[in-house]
Image (cartoon, rainbow, N blue to C red):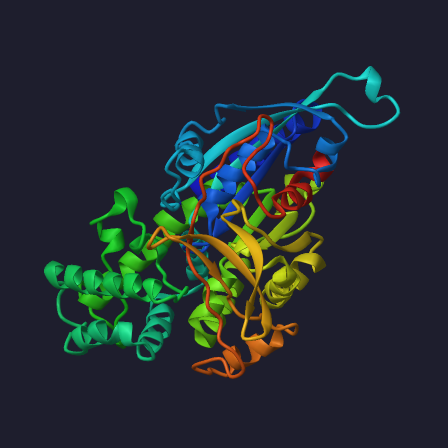
Length: 471
């Protein structure tokens, strides 16, 4: 087994060297990972980014586009034929068709290759032909990324942490009641194991719906073709010293270890470890709306996610000896169109405060980081209304639940992010000074001008940070 692992690792390093030489001498490839937790807008981000790079009229902050050096863009088959293609055409039709609606969320890994023809810059640019730069955009669920934190945990450690968490949440009461009478030392009974796994999966779904983020294992929520398999049929159990062979406890532990070896590690090796640039999308406004506990839970989940990154510069020798590293990380607070632009800087500051530790660590390792408040597809317009002698900066859009047009005032985000983070870390139940309300808006019916992609907020700045240095 060890020899096989070593052979596979050598093979991957040789392949990485070959890829590096090919990219350096011929057509460079930028591999961009896009992730985020549920409802953060990954699918909309990728769809709008690609649409706005194909029709570049709304991308003035991308220097190569403003300079007229991006002469063409086109979609082509991705090099990895074993990964599903990101369904760009259907997602674009959902957002920009005659009856616009939000597309289905990310449920598995997918990939899309967008190739750009770029005229080189510099004194001799006129003597050089345009070169091709490939963007390989990889979409994967943030729930799967959280699983990387399980690699360093034993089954006993994971069980203890999860059971302590369940004891503090009403969503965990049913599972705790069911496991209380279970004798983990008895011989494995498969129907019992299935009932425990089903009950635990129900808890994970309920916790996610309630706004909690630390819902691992992620494949329990998005099982795909693993649904019903033994590798997804385990659950946390109270501690048991010296569990007998063939007991329920030993089998749960064996399946937990199999999950790490056969589900998490292949995902890391085949997808995550090959990323050059990373986008982390966060629905910070949604967490703020749900209250201090949701904000603190999101902060903890973000720390867990970002601990999985290997930040640093992708110099050729580093790639040869150490493998690829994530050299640029964008932290984007999504749905900025749900608040007035006057508050966007405050939302950016909150995003920076939530990810401060991870950003410092990434910068120390040589990676570049950036925070932005963005809207991948703008669904609202702004207006100012008078209310009881006070001017309120509102947003107007089509409400998702009723389909009616409405103007909405969400409340004032604080200038100092610690006014949110401090009560969150102290375990407060509600915000002391203010309440924050955020509505869900449906995409608006749009009339697109030729050469212009869908309207957005700062998507061009995000693209400039992610790929501008390579164009």
